[in-house]
Length: 482
Image 1 (cartoon, rainbow, N blue to C red):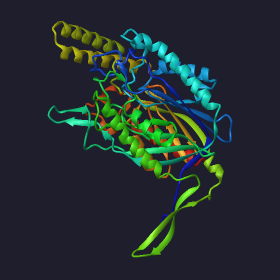
Image 2 (image 1 turned 135 degrees about the vertical axis):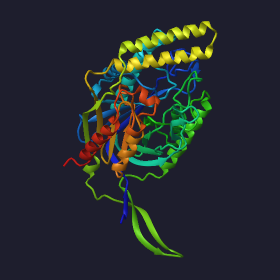
Image 3 (image 1 turned 120 degrees about the vertical axis):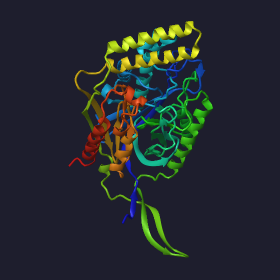
Image 4 (image 1 turned 60 degrees about the horizontal axis):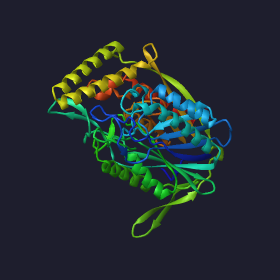
């Protein structure tokens, strides 16, 4: 019989710094194949970078610079340049940085290959400024760390819905709201507070693609994350960091629109759920304990918050990091680079013919296919040779919690399964982490349906389940080093 519910938490040194990283209006912006614009025309909400510096209270050389970034992604070349510049400017080792991209699709696609396009001349200078700003924020945060506690809890929000929808009339799967699909509505919360009492930060870990705004939108925007963050920060008085969860098959119920009011509404829906969850968080060393029955009109079972200190404080100060490689098989039908180049040339000819014929719909569709083939070429350009991709998992334990940094876009099964296997442990499942390299990781049941996510994945059937098992094995080890 359960008589006590403990409050999971971590002891650490912590500090936070925030900066504005909004690209200039007129810079390259187009993210969607169906978009007819290239440059941004304005700003819906500013993009931000928030640096959370976390350090072990027992070892000077154990720390992590967590960077929450309002961007969709950075591919390996661009990411390495930004990281190197941030590490140099911040005077901190590059290997101590962990980037979590919010994955907003309205920030602008900052890839070097887009420099010849309208507004693309701003990409290089912008990424240079971005690296310098992140370095400045990291240095500021590292110099102001103070003893702190992270308290973990959760909330529920049904903004996130499954997005693998079967169009029965056309007999095909599309990427859109699926009312019958499974989606994890868990919002994992981490409240960071200094020992002196002041709030330092709120970490929000939620799985939902920021794809409210799509091809009709021409404004720079953090999507729903912006309004969520504003609401939470107004209530808590501390910066809010968003960590994208396993959202490969998850998106907002209402999305793919051009109206920024919808993005704000989605953000407020999540924000109010977060505030409700924060109200339920206990303080450090408080447990919720069964006190026994009280005879009234009914026999009542009474629970109270009580101080509990039945574990050594060192347990809450536990800091353990690990990094390991999981070999994941490539899909056997990856297209060769020359085939993709031929496809692109064919679509470029089709676009030109459509424009000459005055057919804007056909021209738009051809332009979208040019975008698809360009992205497909980028996905395979950086892949190591061989039959398997050396997938790197970064994991660290902070007291009662485990944090994961995972590159790519994982189907929601990953976080549902990890949390099922470790129900007593808060697991921050951070995806779209660091360089974007492997695209989507689908579960076995989703292969063979003709899904977009399978089309663009570089990994074979079963890769996600292999990764889940490998992570679970290491989580078990890191929680019990014996």
